[in-house]
Each structure stands twice: as C-alpha cells, then as structure tokens.
Length: 639
Image (cartoon, rainbow, N blue to C red; front, side):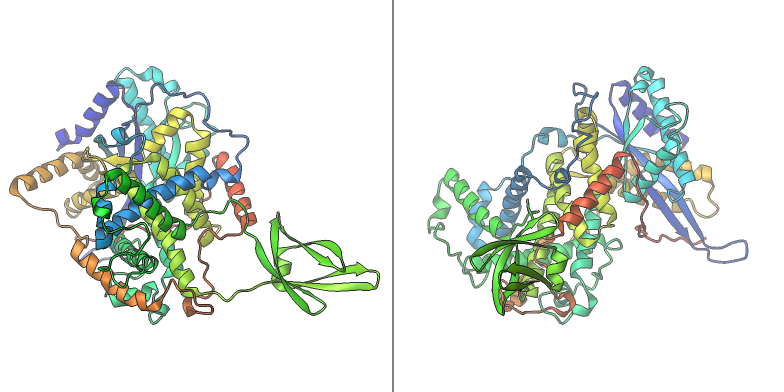
C-alpha cells in the first residue's frame, strides 16, 4: 500500500520535469458515521476532510504574454458582463444546431436535417480539448473548509507541495513568477480566497501564497445552481392542478423522484427539465409549421416535396433559414437598451396611450396641449403609483395624470416562454462542457448573470459568474487567462466531445474516496485514511481493469431513449390542447401570477449598480461568504 501511495507523486514529478504545469482542484469530503452501539464515549461522528487533485495543462501557453492584463482594469463597464451583439449571435448560432438535433431526432418531417447538422460544434481549441487529460490525485487533508483556520492550512499545504515539486525537478528558478490556479465550488473558492487575504500581509511570497493564483469557480456547480434556481422559479407543489406547469407535468409522467431539491437528485431533476423543455419546444414547432402531430409533414413555403433530394449546400442554406426563423421567434437576449414603457396619460378626462422612452432613472415622453409641446419626465415608481403633473396655461393649470398602462397578461404563455430560455441555456451549457469550448463557456456565463440576478441580487453564483468573467477576460494575463479557461474541463477518454467539468471529476473522485475510507472499517486512524487516499488512483485502476477483463458493465441510471420519447409524447398530448402559443389575455396561473416572459427582463438601473458594486469588490479580492446549502449526501456506516 505504501508503494501504491507514491504513485501520484512520482508521476507528478515526472510531468513537471518535462516542463508541464497544471491546476489544483479541491472539494470537501464529508462522511457521517453512525454508531451501532451508542454509549457516552461512542456517538455518531461527522468527519470533514478535504480532497484535491492536480490536472496538467493541455493547451500550450509558453509563447503567450504574461506581463499585463488582457483587459483595461481601470475602466470596467457593466456591459462587459452581458452578451455583446457578436456573442449573442454566437449563442443563437449554436442554438440552431442544438435545436436542429432535437427536430431531426423526434420529427419525421425534419429527418432531412441530419446530414447537415455537425456532430460537434467547432471551436478554435477543438484539437486540443479532445486530448486526454492527465489527472493525479493528491493526499487527502484532514481539514474542514468551513473553518478559515483550516483553509489557511490547506493553502499552506498546496504551497509546500508546489514549491517541493518544482525544486526537486530543477525548476526552482521558475518559482519567482510561477502561478498555479486553484479551482472549486462556490464555498471552496470563497473560503480559499479568504484564506489568501488573511495572510496577505506576510513577509515572504511563499507565506503570502502568491504561487496559488487565481482561485476560480468551476462549471458543474454553476450548472447545478442554475438548475436549482429554475425549480425555484417554475416548480411549486401547490400547482399540481394547473395544467402546463412543471408540477402538473411531473404528476402526468409519474416522476416521483422530482421534488425540487436538485442537489439530492441532480440527474433526475435535469432529465425532467430536458423532457419538459423538449415537449414545450416541439409544441411550438407543431404550431409554427401547422402540424397536428409529430407524424405530420411540416407546412412551410421553403419545404418542398423533394427536400431530401436536394444537394448538401442547398440543404445547409435551407437549414440555416429554417432554424434562424425558429430561433428568432423563441430565443431572447439581454436587451442592449431599456425597452420603452407604455403609459396612460389623462388630460381633462381624455386618456391617451403614449410610449415613454427610459432616460436614466426617468421616463420621458412628449405631449401637445393647446398647440404647445410639453416634455414630461416621471420616475417608474411615480408612474406605477400614478402621478399628477400640472402644466401652466394662460387660462390656469391643466392637470395631467400619468399611470403605467397595465396589460392583461397570459400567464401560461409567459411561463412557457421564460422556461424555454432557461432550457436553451442549460442545453448550451451542457454541450459547451462536452466540447470543452472555452469561448462559448464565457458567453453562457454572461447569459447566466442577468438570469441569476432575476432570481436574487444576493445570488451567490451571480458573483461567481462575474468573478470568472472578470478574471479570464480582464484581470489575468493572456497566458493565465487561457490556462484557467482550458483547465475548467477535463477529458478522461481522449475523444472529441468527451469533456466534463473539472469539479464534476473531483466529485467522482470524492465518491471513490468515501468508499475506500468506509472500507477501512471501525477505529480507522488518520494515517490509514491519508495512506488509502494516496493509493486510491491505483486501487481504482486495478478495479476497473478487473471489471473490464470479467466483462462487468457499469450500471447507468440515465433514462433510455424509448422512455424519453414516450414521456415527450404524453406531455405533447397534454400541451397541444392548451394552445399555449395562442395568447389569451387574462389567462392566469394562481401559483405564477404575472410571471414575466423573459428572465432578462430586469430593472437595468439596479442590475447595473449591482454588477458595478460586485466588480469593484472582486477587483480588490474581497469575497463575501454566503449561506451554502449542504450539497453533500449523508454517508453512513456501522461500527
């Protein structure tokens, strides 16, 4: 076992000696041990450890600049944290392919799309991100990340390991400028960043932990939090009788494992959202192309009878036109400017509908009274409550009453429309992670920022998304920015489209470590726990090789294609009669009254001030710890 324990360390030294650098990832490892015979001196125990690994870089960054930031650190407008016009186009172009795959898979009338839809969305680092990642496990630390004192010790241990590795292989001279990124979930990032801040006044670079920079968040937990916020927005146990809602759909297809608690059963909740989102999307397609069922032929002026016999280039143009029409109808973006607001203006008992233009914190509109043109400015709050403005004339003052024009909304249509925006973002996120596309990844995060803000101004992953964009697009050097963005993904197979988030890989390693630690039995010592954690990768490889030779297949919990299609058909039978896409004024959902049709419909002034405030704080390296739900499952063993 001691020989196995040196496996990772030997290989790490060999890789560093070859000139490679890497990134450290960490995550908490919590085990709850239940005692069978409980006594005063023998009670249930809760162990809190910290597991880590080192992932070597796949991208070549030696020739990139490492002397100055890639962006202007002094001037950071809030527009940098929302999608630009170019990024919005890139996002929608990728949606065309993702949604095209769904159409060609489920509707016979769109099977002709398959030959022109790429299996993988191309990106600049596609050849690099399909290489196999080199992941090496580090010894477990008997520390609790919930304590800052332990976090300082965790970072000190990282610092000692980095200095030891580079010194032992003859690269000690690089320590003057070496920076090793550290990744983790939201709590890990905030705690380890706080630990760095605590020792910022130390005398030496080693004591100040300067070799460990930046501390960055990871993608799987971001996707998990996005899914959790989706359920908080669209799932309510009281809406079981409201047709078309998530709770009603859950009852319809008997998904008893879906209860809104995403962290306990992530895959079940994700699969349910993908199933419902697919059904909503296909219901729009049936309406848009005048189809009564998924077996019908789509009716469209461009879809001729011989479309299957067209040349490939003609099919590609047709595909682009059809999908652009669909994405333009459904896809939404963060508006580049505040939308105009309709007002009701009452002058001497006569009411006029007038469109006002936002100007800062005011709503501006012009009105002609007695052949004179008056410019009015009111705040949105005044218009909401109703404001009276007196205008002077030669015959006295004329009162002008201004109120916001309230239109009767269609709650069901708005509910489905907003849900689809979340669904599209999750589809894009999942595909981006699989492909390891570092450019689309940042675009997805920029779409996530207003979505998280619409949930709460105190959303913890709102800050994490801003922090990631701030570091990788502005504050880091060109070399470190590329290094950090590429290290957000790992590929264990060396195949294209087989990447996964680095923190998801860490979660899988934690599961293996828990099984090995539980296998030590009762009265396990700290030395035994550390030794077994060092030997874990070798033990795992041995087990995998034995299972492979014996032909033992790994059991999968993912739903099969047949059951997915069956559930979608059941949901479509429920959705189509609701006529979701025929807007009905006044149609209400009691649990979701006046829900907006877009997650990007936020108060721009509040959004701008919140993003600016968070950006200025993160520039100083200050992170505020927020309440974190326990995302670890209860593990138990009997003594």
